[in-house]
Image (tube, rainbow, N blue to C red; front, side, top):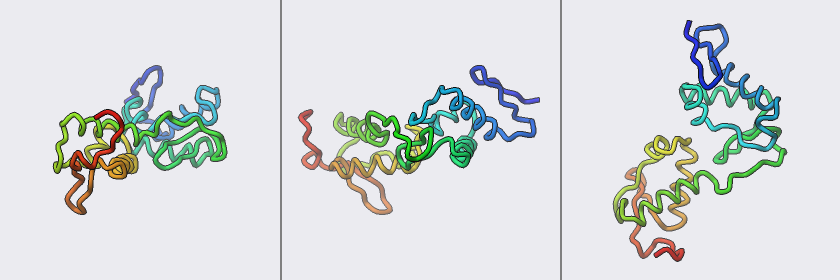
Amino acid sequence: MSSLVYGSTVLDRDGPTPVYLQIAALIRDQIERGEIAPGQPMPSEADLEREYGVARTTARRATRELREQGFIYTIQGEGSFVGEPDTPRTPRKTPLYQEIASKVAERIRSGEFRPNRAIPSEKLLMAQYRVSKVTARNAVAFLRDQGWVFTVPHRGTYVNQPAKWPTDGKE
């Protein structure tokens, strides 16, 4: 029998109930006990992967199951939240994609990423920050909108010349 313990949680990987349903049930119980209140963000897919030692697809299926049961709703690029879509949510202080963009901008400012050289690809940003493709893409778009980078179709995204960088008092 292959039962693994995560925290105080036991997942039965050999039993008749799929692991994603077990994870969904555990989170549903947390919601019903009030441990995750309406409007609060639910753990991200990356958090579920780490916490339960599962693949991204399993975490995604657990999230979808909770959404289909009406316990959570998802806003693309922001995450999933407990409750119905009209439930006021507790927003992040700064959207995740902006946090990532800020970290990449700091690496540009420090000289780690030099003008006319590529920044990490969306795939690498996804892996490094353990986020979805949409979040990585939004971070790159935010950097582009601010003037830190420019994109060459089918080639990549490159650091702009310093004269095009935003001025925010840190230079």
